Image (cartoon, rainbow, N blue to C red; front, side, top):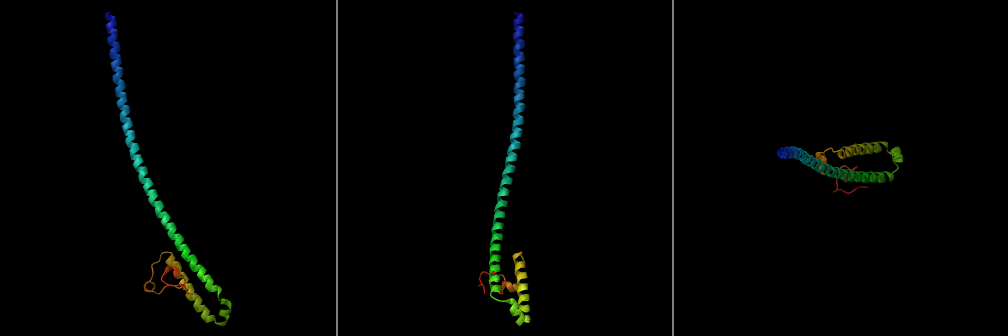
Length: 149
């Protein structure tokens, strides 16, 4: 009977020791899971910030594309207008009759076209342009003026 009691005590101590070790393992696993959860929450926050930044960038890209498309439409309109103007005249015949006049007109128009490209590329307007002397080669930059033909 004594041996039975000793065996029962040993079994109880072994169970208590095993239970203690199991609880310690669970606590350690719980700590690891808490650390992992913290890392995951940080990663989620970082991902949300990246998504917000990408969304803002996408909106900016879309608005820039719209601006470029609008500028392209204006430039196409100016090109069409210029083609219409040039289609009305036989420059070769006019150049034979009045070469000095044609040279002066072409040089002035070339300078104006270069200035149009500068403005389209982002160059600021000059004082003269701001004070109401728009460039005739790119009337779309001055919405208050009408297109002369």
